[in-house]
Amino acid sequence: MEQRQKVIGQKSQQFHLFFCFTIGLTIVFLQMDELWSYLKNKSQQLWVFIALESTTKFWIGFELGSRTTYTANRLVKGIKKLGKWGKDNILKVATDKLAAYKNALENIMSEIPYAYLQIVKRRIKRRLVTVKKYFVKGTVKDFPGKSQNTSFIERLNLTLRQHISYLQRKTLGYCKNKLNFSNVMWINLFNYNYIQFHKSLRIRINNENEKFIKKYNHNTPAMQMGLTNSPLNWRYLITVPIPCK
Image (cartoon, rainbow, N blue to C red; front, side, top):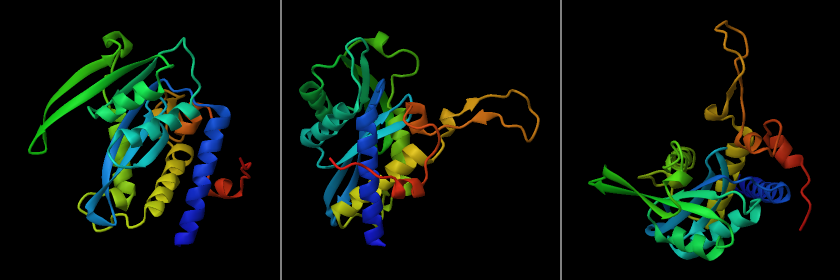
């Protein structure tokens, strides 16, 4: 079982990185956040940094490591490598107050025009008290409508905590092997981006209330991003050839 998980996880990683790098991602609104977990024992924390393109709900990638600028740099470098960038469009970025994101963006995205918003939440006894917005770079005009938030990445965090035992709270199923953790994350990334339909991405095609009539066209994040025309499956992942670097 562990060997099978390793093979599928590595194939998921290779497929995603090759596919995104070859075609290129159109990233309009980037949200980043981190989740905590454990490695080997509960005295050693392991952090998972995640990046999401919120307009398409496309999960771009993740990095495992400490809660430092070093891990954030690796995440942002991966995003820059996979994206299609132009100086005409301004990239919107939203994160929490962690300074590592600000440092990583300044170090790596200096050549790319972007507007950066920090959402600072204050809690007392785990209860949310206040939410403040700090425009680190750019103004309110750069974040029109309901885009001044990190709601989409936080919803992805919830999905991952429900699907991956390593990320569940108050669990004995924490990670004993970092490589296993990475493989599980890649498997879930492939499933999230390329297989599962997302309700928020469906498009209504029929306004009639009659039964047995198709009312929606359903999309995966990869379809919404323009990478695929239909949902993929595990058989496709296992059988598709991927060129070596």
